[in-house]
Image (cartoon, rainbow, N blue to C red; front, side, top):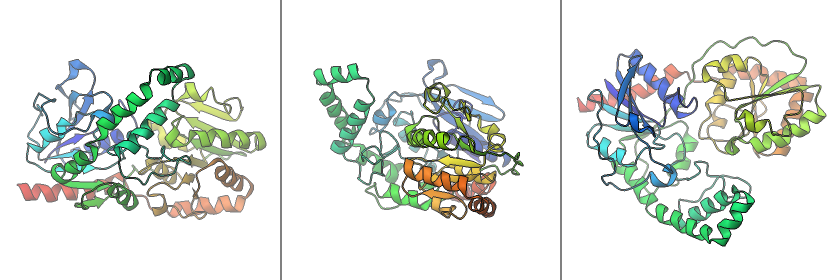
Length: 424
């Protein structure tokens, strides 16, 4: 079988999220002796429409577009002038994500008249910020369907918040805020129609990682639920590395300063906790070291700050940790949660999509039903002060069943074979 995968970057260029998934599928498909190619966007003009091969995987590069969140959704036109020069005749396309691709790629793919499978991994179709929590003051999940006026107001408001004071003043004096909002409205006016056209006319099959996220996604569409499967993302299972005994409890957080990952909650909570329990806890923070060094928690001796880790080193990194903190405001699925469980690290996590499918609160992990500083502090204190509770969580976590990458791909391959047998 000949399969073309499509995602925003190679895993060697972007070592998290969908590029890791794509790399996983590429290598598992190779094991089945499939021919595989990865399509990725690039801003390097020297790579436009070029193909190279490494470790039996073909890589083909297409021109990336700027400000994809607004410009990546258009009706068919002739912007992507070159035809795809693929290294083989494909049997199907598997889209992991479309970030930074010209929207015309979908129309090019459809002309091949072969199955197009779309993984819905995040919420970039409907939300400029990908994380639909910024419209509500408490950062709760946005339940409103895409609306050009409401969404353009949300985008303008939140972009304005990020400006420095002088730029804010200039923005207001020049009436640029209103002009910007009008520009967003114009870009969003056909978005719903275009997305629903893609769902109804371009994609032949959809894959979601959890039932609750599929329900949320479809609640924003205007089409009937088309055929789809729920296939949880799998991880490469390895034996848990034996932990070194430590008098202190080791906490780990890996989201950097990304708002969506709950950095503000980590910073506020652990500033309090580290002052109160300096002799009982250690904290390691991964990601954005230059920025986390400016944090008020950086001065504590029992805090270690790192840049983004290499995913290949994750199991070794987790062998240090007792507790993993995931206070995300929005996640459609979190592989890191599964990695924690695989290494017997107790998770304290917000209640994002798919969490309740594997975590029973206070039984094999802790779910922050209200994702805020107060609840995180309370949960950490219970871990610190109640050995029996911590021991119970640690024992029960070993009984959680996590799907492996091989099990995940087996289910995906069943979809491939179904379509392949229909068209051959």
